[in-house]
Length: 234
Image (cartoon, rainbow, N blue to C red; front, side, top):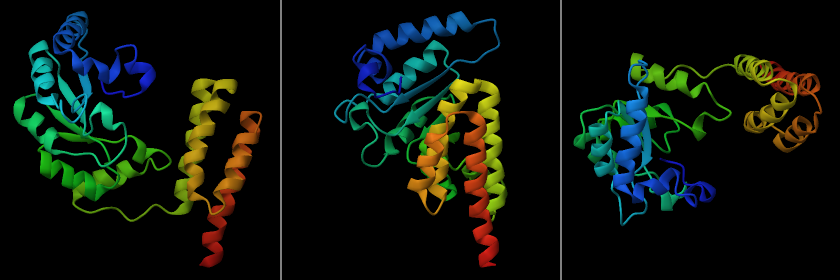
């Protein structure tokens, strides 16, 4: 119940459901009932409300807890905010105080320090990342390092980042196959390409590849050259 996209909300799905609390309750009760006996917990993701005048996240959270929802993830924006402005965590803190099930904070968490600050200010059980992990999946390593060990790890060397990129591509190809793998990898390479010095040129080459083998070879060359630049500077 967190998606703000017009094509979703226009069908009274996603964040649009936050406008109809009785319907939210019926949906959640039905899903929890369907999952009983499977051992699979049902969780819910929402925003803080439909718009800033109707931040009903705490009310929806109480409905969810009563329906048997196991945990909540809350994006710190209303549907009307889409992804604009800064996420606010006061409502997340209010929701956390309203229920006894775990609450996970989401929205604009883009560094280990921000994760620590959000956890401290909201009392949330955890944090959820989305856009900040696109093209930088090692952010989870940084956050876990600070939260578990109290220290943000040293940045990964370029060679280690390159290896992660290439391993990710191989996983995409294996899971999705040739045609879908090629297409899905393009968006990830668009994000990873921001690491490179000549992002527009590299991105054009990634997008121009017509099969997974040539796309992978292109990524191998581009990120290999990027690693060599570090060696040359040393």
